[in-house]
Length: 318
Length: 255
Image (cartoon, rainbow over all chains, first blue to last red; front, side, top):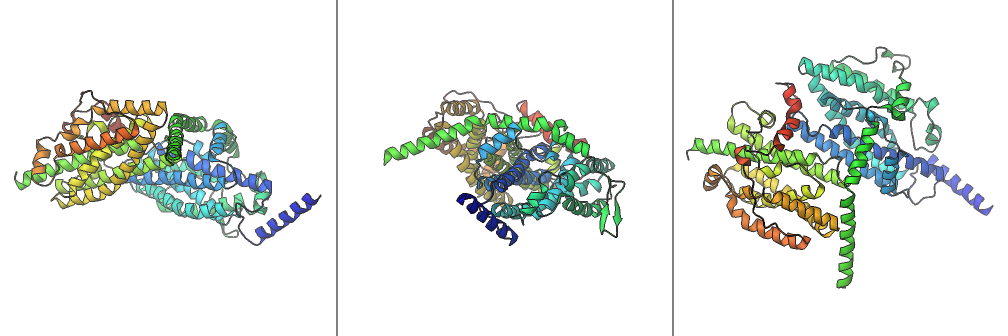
């Protein structure tokens, strides 16, 4: 009974701190469900950065100019860096990276479903930077105010780099849109294919979202899926206009009363189909990760053995 | 050599050095999302980026010397494998992680000697590029050195793979130290580097490092040559086909 009273008091104090916008830090008491919810979200975010290296990595060797190649290398390198910060943030919750990677590879942990769409053309590299990273930023800007300290601080840094990523993507699109007829067709085609999946990145509508309500209460999430999606829809309209491309949503229309754009229905069947394994790249992305990880096993073993030998030699010398 | 001949020869040298950097940068970039650690994805991308940056500087200078309207991308994307003059060792497929790190060690060690000399070139642009590249190479060499020691010392398997990589790469190192007439003339003119002078130190450093890593330098004396004359292995054609595919599919476009 004493224990229960204690837990209630701890939980009360935890909720008070959340209410006062204080950050929760790794050594603070937190409800187990809060820890699990964070771990799920941060590790999923980390996995998304890592799996997200594949579609763009696939163009590092083919980028159509040296400048583009250099910029894309810097960008993909950043994504790997984001994966590292996020794995580190998740490790502060008590789970080692190796366990998170095992969960990714077994399918127990998820990554953003957007990366199950194929990057087929160079235009897709532009669309991914512009729309996919653009949607991610809308979400991440909001997460800079998340209640867990290490995650919030990681987001501040990640947001700065992501805005460079979005600009490089938009710049690719701009060059294509101002280029030859074939390049303009490429840009329009990539926009058409990535626009709707980018909207789906914010997750199901609030009424259908499994984890939303409690995450909002704990201030892990600060804005709902639909609010964030609307922000993204609104900001994207003038960007499409500036490119001189056609908007992929024929129903897009300014609503002066709401002060937002009204938009067409999202195909949620497609969303769930891709999440459930029917995307073009679901199997390919995981298989790639597993193959690379296995191929590197002997290197990791060698590093461990070398460190052990060094420690033994140091011990023997003293 | 007349000033015109010297300028033409300097242009050719800038292209060769650009080709070296581009081809190795391309190979290294293949590791991104394929490395044994996430940290290595980052490191390989970082080193690849240094080489791509170097290629751009050399090609940019070549374009300036050529002064015929060609730009860096024309050199990178619109020449065929017979026109590329990179060393053969750089175009070999990336192999396993030991192969990649051993190649880096051999090349980083060579570059560190080469760039130290090129920093003193009386061609101010080449000297400036070399000074920048030297800073990067110091870091590259520290990294490849540490990896080869780690892998040589690690497990039976890592030692076997590392020794094997050394054997497979050895025959491609000879041409690094065999300057042709053009390179010798440029060295005499105080512009280029006489790479024959670099070999003794290179070999000495390598022997010391091999001892530390528990490896031995190959004794067998096979040698494959031809990079500087465009006589390549079959690997380069595939590398260029991939590198140039999009650029060539849309002729005359800006990206």
